[in-house]
Image (cartoon, rainbow, N blue to C red; front, side):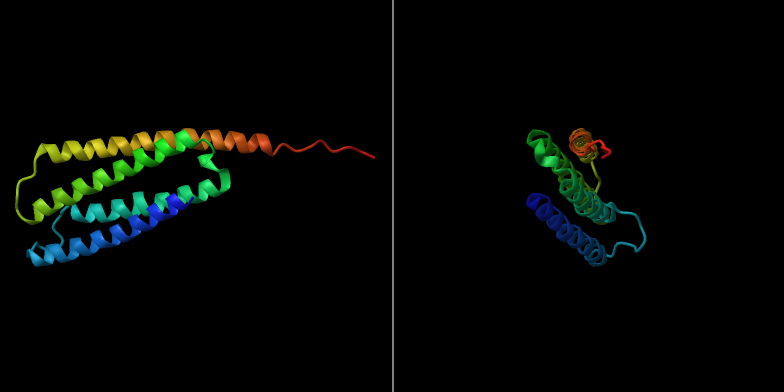
Length: 149
């Protein structure tokens, strides 16, 4: 649980920091206000996929003890986080190039796509672990039959 809490906290800090970077970097480079850049998407990806999703996973861990299947939980944690970091890094890189008026390459899109695939794989593993935990919890809460005196 502590790993989830720490990761969520780090994503919150980096997410807020990326929003600050977005605002200040565009101002510093006289980028037209309201014009699209992927820097704003990095801010929301980090806060939503990193901070909020991991807080939800933390709550589910508390209720269902998802880490009782440590291999599955570890696969989820590392696949998912690698995907969020990779995707967000590519959004920042692409967005920064846009603000600087530079051309982006297909490589950036490809790597961002790989990040999204890792997020998807992590979520699939997460739901497998969640399903096992829910089934396990249902099995342990069977009610004893009522007997009449």
